[in-house]
Amino acid sequence: MGVDKKSSGVKTSAWRVLITDDSMITRMFLKNMLESNGYTVVGEAKNAQEALDLYKETRPDFTTMDMNMPDSSGLEAIKSICEFDTDAKFIIISAVDQKLVRDQYAHMGACEYVPKPAEWSKLAAAISRLSKKIVSKSPESES
Image (cartoon, rainbow, N blue to C red; front, side, top):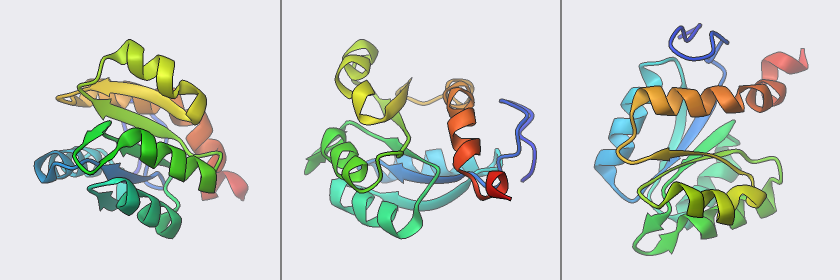
């Protein structure tokens, strides 16, 4: 916990993450990667409805989002979450083409993209780009 020396050097222990992916293996992999680098995983969702329910319950600083899930899409989850919280932040972790993702989802709060399979260096860079927005929302910045 504490300082994440591999990315921005900003304290990450207060950063709370919701993971959304239909693959249990991918969720476990992301959880391990995030927690081993000082992030707190507050929930894991396998579809859009679970993502919305867990988002409402946990209010994470950002959500990782898969785009292709068999019973719902990442787009549906992002829309639902953004209706609940217009300040929601997302890192899309998907095999979907980056330009397509950027064009279709950027206006909906989907802020960053990491291609699958996710590598820590790319995920850390995406988190770093979100850091100003995450820090401004964190409880530490309100004191």
